[in-house]
Length: 318
Image 1 (cartoon, rainbow, N blue to C red):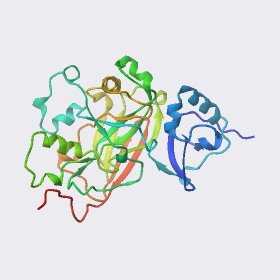
Image 2: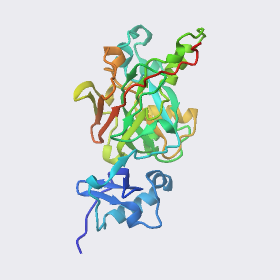
Image 3: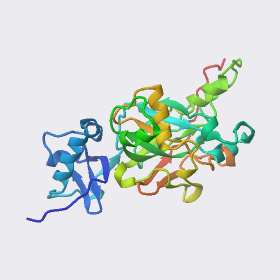
Image 4: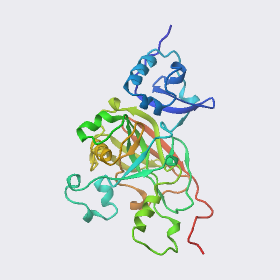
C-alpha cells in the first residue's frame, strides 16, 4: 500500500464539497483530518484546545495518510474562523510611529520606556484568504497593515517573556485593515477622547482582519523575531520590513498581555505593522485594490477591497 509521509507544519480550514473541514497542508496536498480521525477534533481550534497529546496523535495519523486533497478542490477559509479573542497592537514599529510625524513622542529607548498598546477586535472582523473586504459605510478612507499574528496554544496567565514561547502554538498572517476616517464625526460636538475612539472604531468593521492562509506551528517557524514581511497593492510593494524591528517582540507582547488578561488556546494576537501604510504615504486604498501580505516561512494572504457604498452612514446628520 502506498503511504504518504507528512510533517505537521501548516494547518488550514477550508470548504470541500460544501462542507467545512480542516487539515494538514503539504507540498503534495491536504490531509483532511476528520476523514482520518473520526473521533478527533473537528476544527483547528478544537485541535489546539485538545493540547499536546492531540498533536502527537495527529502526527501519527498524518504519517499514514492514504489520500490527499488537491488544493484546487478546496476554498481556504481563515485557519481559525472563530478565535476566542482577536487582539491588535498599535504602534509596535518605531518607523511606523515616525511616518506620522510623531517622532518627538517616542523616547530614545522605547523597549524600556514604553509598553505595548493592545486593543480587542470582534470575531466578525475575521475573514480568510481571497475574500472581498466590504467597504464599511462609516469611512471614506481605508488602509492596509501587514502584521505577524501569534496563535496561543494553552491558557496563559502572568508569564514572563522567557516563558511565553511555551504558550505559543503557531503563527499566521494578519492584515489589520483600518478605517482612517469616520463619517459620524461630521457635525458632532467634539469631546475628550473622540480621536481615540474614532481610531478604535476604525478597527472593528466586518472582515477588517483577514488572517491566513495557514497556521504554521511554532517549531516550524523557529525564531519569530527575524522574519521578513512584505505587503503589495496591485503588485506594487508598499511595506517591507523584518520582525526584528518590533519595539516589543512576540515573547514580550505575549507576556505583557498575559498580565492584563488570561490568554486562551486559539487567541490570535496581531503584533503591529511596520511603516509604509497608505495614510502616511498619501496612497490609501481604492475599491477593487488587491492587497497581498507575505511573511517568511508562513505564506501569502491576498484579499480585495470592495467598492465604497453609494451613501455613507452619518448619525449626526440633521
